[in-house]
Length: 428
Image 1: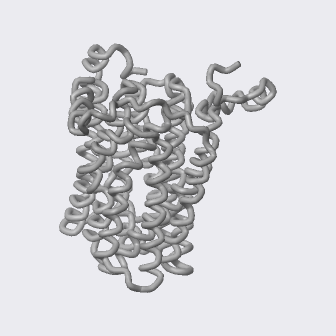
Image 2: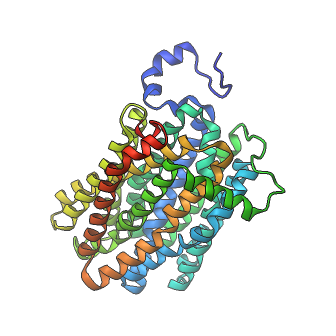
């Protein structure tokens, strides 16, 4: 009998699916199998809204800076609220937290959809609702990251994180394509409403799971600020976690921000409509899916430094090449490579942190990770919007890529010292 009662695969099923499970062992968990389809539908809706919002802002104002500003509004709250969210994640059942946050995000999507459908939407309304959504995500994202450790065995955690990343990036293939069709056929309002309905899928998935939440790890009587301080001290003193968080900060500011400029590139460089924009998002997402699948298949078999430093270097070189081409076929190829490299690196960083962290600090460490990853994005979004407005989008993206390559070189040079400080964990 399996030591995990959540795993239920008969010998016959194992013979039929053994190869699949060896590549994607997270699916051995019944709860993960229930989580997966609901999250796919919900994240597809999220990407539909992201594309529709960027396009709507560009139509309203015509400003690349405003596109970046709207994207920043949804991530600014992460800087101020994520650490408190991490304390709650370590104190209360994570599945219940996710049910509340997903429900709140659903309501915000319906509200934005109604404003757009009635023709009363303004930039100020978009910014306000994006800010509220950012407040919700400040709790939702660390809860989701920590929840993965509850629904799979620890040795399958890297696979679960990679597959969760594959959900996010696979939805980048499907969601933008659907968004392009919806915007062209019925307008952005329908796209927001579709996202609202998509949350029902993940809510149903969560309700169908067997709740395996352990007793709260952080004492309820402990002051939140003391709990945050403990989490920060633990993260800073841990060489692997400290290095991973610093590196993800560089990625968040200088690499990931290219996504917010795709509406500008689609419209001004390739003269595309909303459907064409969906193609750009989709091909980047396809590369990301391939990257996360490889991480799931080869986690523990390949040096993590290959995925992290190698992936970000590949991303940077591909994006630099992308900015120099005005022909669509090579542009799509470079976007594919960029998505492949960047997400392979990010999912490996997340798995490295999750594998190294003590369970007592998991919620707070993951909240710090997501605070840096998502909370620093506004800096990158505003910077790339400003640079694009004054020097051109291509120059702005190239500068970010050069900084990312430099960070990868520093990581490689310092990796030996990190491994000595914390055994061989960072190497495998």
